[in-house]
Image (tube, rainbow, N blue to C red; front, side):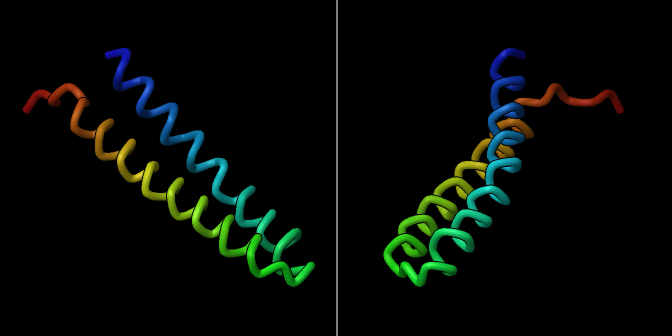
Length: 68
C-alpha cells in the first residue's frame, strides 16, 4: 500500500513539473535563442515524461483489485 502511494505521488509531481519545464524552455531557451539549452531541457522533459508513464503503470498494476 505504501508503494502505491509513493508511485501515485511521484506521478503527480512529475505531472505538475512538466508545464514548469516547458515554460523554462520557452523563457530561457527559445527567447534567448539558446539551442543547447532547448535540446538539453527537451531531454530532461522527455525523461520526466517517460518516468511519469512508468509511475502510472506501476501505480495501476499495484492497485487492489476492485470487487465485481
